[in-house]
Length: 472
Image (cartoon, rainbow, N blue to C red; front, side):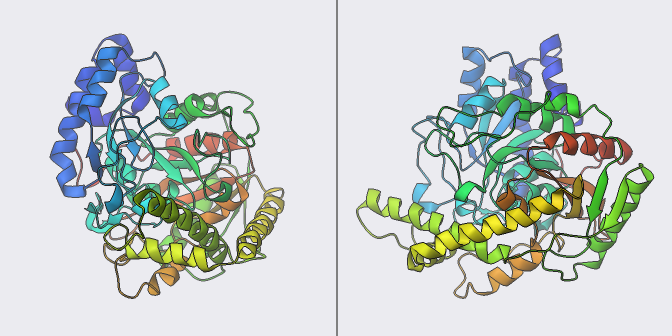
């Protein structure tokens, strides 16, 4: 099916519904594309084709994506399938249950034929694990596809499939969407479920959704998976209407603030800064009111999130040791994971509470700023997609990593702390042909405005037909 890559997920589902193609034929095509392209990019690290075939044989639910091939990120459970979390210790781990979000994807009708690559426990903004190796950017194989949903970004960009599961605790949907030239929206805190084993991830920072080639796929999938579950500790504001309807509505004249600098006020890559200004001018031509300003941060977001992530990593390692009945070693986890866990164990309990307080203060500043505009535009990444090897989680000296991350993604984690919806839109490419995503953040609970604006930008500066050199 040569035209497979020209369709988004809703387009493929429409073909199935009309009887023009079967779910089995779409699955066969996705598998063929995986086998042909993935050896070059290493995006699909777990394959369970028989599981997807059994879904079809059993009978797929009638949903918006019935028959569409799909990948889960290799952090989430699909009962009876391998889920490694990118860690050597868990290379043969079989998920005992379905996570709630997995069930909701299945209820939408997708066929889950594998897992996409993630760095170990989703900790890094690049996807290069000791267990599976590096996931490569389809635009340039020497560069990273981003992280932590790097496999999803690379697979969608290379047109192995049009839409794939992704999660975002500090930018992990938006970073690979930017690096790979596709669309990625992190929803409002608690918009999508994290159960049944836990009520929130990384202190409420983490959210699950998808990376896609089209805005409407993102909107339709959020319609399918959003909403609380029995164990949800809190809920996102209910939407006024379906998100898919929002993607077809006029955004009106929006007040858009923008910055071409990092969240710390530093200068950024000049081509990225120029791209932000170009997009700001585009927004003005579309009738929006645009002015240059940014929120002032009362605390250091990088230090804040590192404390909270370290504590969560320490718990993961502790539970592994309890199950093993022995201390873990570098044969089990990467050095960076172990170092983060040590930091978490060495920090006082009060340091975690202090980090939560700082996250609230950052969140408050972001929320107050959001009252002065409808959308805030900033660069998703402040450097071009990293070259593979720039972040080495097995290095003897891990100290340079924090400074590099601070330069690379200074602003993505702010929306995780505030819980605001935030998206990366593929609106620019640099002179080397690498994608440069633009990040738009709206008020808490207001995905509607983002979907309206994204659809307008998609019509004005379409990206779907712009495909990378490595493409199925």
